[in-house]
Image 1 (tube, rainbow, N blue to C red):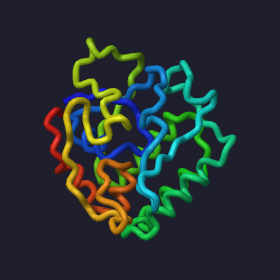
Image 2 (image 1 turned 120 degrees about the horizontal axis):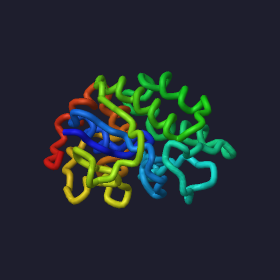
Image 3 (image 1 turned 30 degrees about the horizontal axis):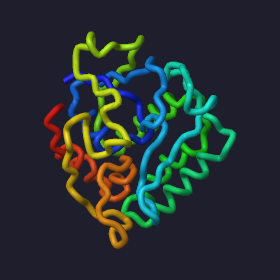
Amino acid sequence: MKILIESQYAGSILYFAVLRKAEAVWLEQHEHFRKGSYRNRCVILGANGALRLSIPLQSGKDQNKPFEMVKISYADPWQKIHWESLGAAYRSSPFFEYYEPQLKAFYAKQFSSLSDFNQQLFDQLNLFLKKTIPVQFTKSYEASETFEGLDLRNCIHPKNPISLGNELVDFPSYIQVFNDRFEFVPNLSIFDLLFNLGPKAGDYLDNLLITSV
């Protein structure tokens, strides 16, 4: 199945599971940026519960420009904040230190565009997950009516965290860092799955039952 989908910041577990099942993936680069999505945010599990990490953007979140032209703002030290938040949340997890050296670099280097940051981080995460996902980038805006495949843009969204569009997805539980404080929290950022399951994260993704893909 050929899939059309948006770029995400350290995408959700569902996002990676869907892409691993696709024969080909087209990442939308020409739609106008949409606020309130996973394009510039991810959700991890911290000591006080679910924690949203958002990448600030030049011109703010209300901007009327194609995704490929969206620039990251470095006016505030968001990289330091995100990296310290990841460390506070997962340093005691089984595999944080294993992945730390490669990931830390993404929070030290400045990337011009959100698209570039997301894609380079996506590539690194897939190396950890031992899966090559065949990704191509749209050369112009793709209308859903003419796209020859499955249009999943905006189907994986923070407002419906355990759903793929209209499909409710069941996420088997695994041990999370703060399982002594909280019940299992499903479909967090792929960071949560990697740091807790390590090499078994890919098996978890491949065994996730998604009937619409």
